[in-house]
Image (cartoon, rainbow, N blue to C red; front, side, top):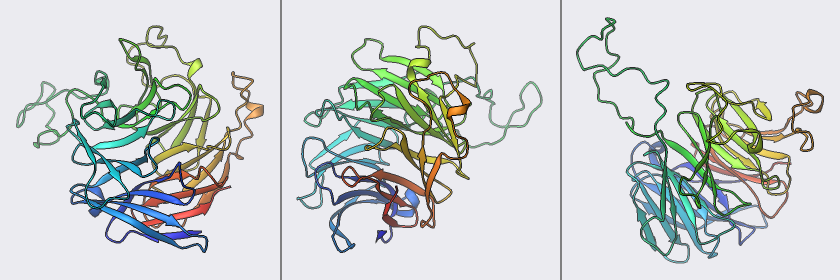
Length: 373
């Protein structure tokens, strides 16, 4: 295990470079991302086990996510609390080489397209997913869906009683977005350049096809109405995805088993949603991130507010799409648990190079590189 401290800055995201086996990018924010500035760190892992900072970039607001460019070995993309997405060149100093500012709230995730490498997407608390080209200042497309109001209480006038005689819970103005739900993560499919998967605060998991005039092709409730924080595509099985939620679980889905937006069989207002292929339970608090392994079709990693990273084995049989409980090998899904962090673990990533290595970062101002499998 190797370690690096980011003094004064709490980690939010870490990513391995797709070009160099020993380079990491880490997005951090001061004061746990609540207020203050942020910092992007470019780290090198040396053969002797030391991790050193090659470069760092100060930002005006906290950074919540980071991803490497698929076009240029020295370009790194960050998402920020001020609603901006910035592109940095790690060989230059101080300032980003491009800034994309259209979101009206915090940008919580960025993802570079692995198939069509001229595109990347961002998702925000303003309820939108935007698709960008790094050479253009304006977004190519904005994806948005109607807010899920099925569990929203009726609005009360400040200082008045409702018809039922209930007292308002608060006199403060609401900070929620009246039109859309927070989109916590959006990611491009590694199999299809036009497909985007996103999850939001209303527990909806949504699949978008950016070639269609009506891009939303799939929309289902993934975690019984509780906030869904993360999602990822399986790198080998094109129809299999994983989602993670504040309900402490990870669910694995086969998108072919879920009816599309035009053929919904569940009644309107259903808060349960369809059945997952598999459910992984073992974290004690909300699961912040889930990532499928780039080396294996049945391994995935998660990190959580319980201060651990966990490695899981998905025993669902790809050949038998209907659940056969004999194949699920209950209790054997958890392969490894990494517990060196002393605060919420916010970001993790698999090494693309050394099979079984992983990196993680959290609010304890630490970046760890460790053997996952």
